[in-house]
Image (cartoon, rainbow, N blue to C red):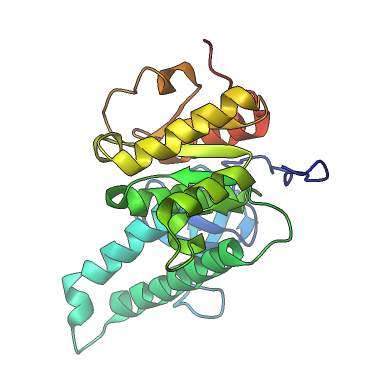
Length: 259
């Protein structure tokens, strides 16, 4: 790592939505929906399920019933709308149209977040993501949510060079990173490629105390003894809290193994 490389500043992870945010409804009759927070009026949030100019109207929702939408929220809700049986109807009603506007908002937001992640940077990558193909969806969600907080990331699917040997790309990615996020699942623990990635990361952390390894548990499984020596994050019960936990560990840059 060059001496003049300065990691990007990490913004504070907030559970409080602000005007203009894309929000997720956590409870009430609209639980699970994605919308745009326009304003606060009489202690209620004004939310459009779509954009302000592309929706069938607004709803007033209690501020405690919403929070900023994560990538996990967006991907899950997109799948829910796509799988709705009445969405195939040739006679759309108001609910149908409302869901279409909501889906357009979700797709626009996903597109913008993907572009922000894929935009080339003059700085070196900050994070290296170690994950297996079975965990690609959850890994990408965590990666993009961390990028939203100010991190940069080397993600194999987005940053790999076609035709280049895997080990060469892995070594280059880890060399340029100053932190590694290891997505922990039963599938990743049985993957030889993922094991090679995180053991390489652990080796680098022993030689370079500023390099941090953060395991992120995504399903019930037992951490390998070596990885259990590092502070880890957990997204199993509360995805949003787990992403916040990951961000704090990365920002601290102090997760050194206790050997």
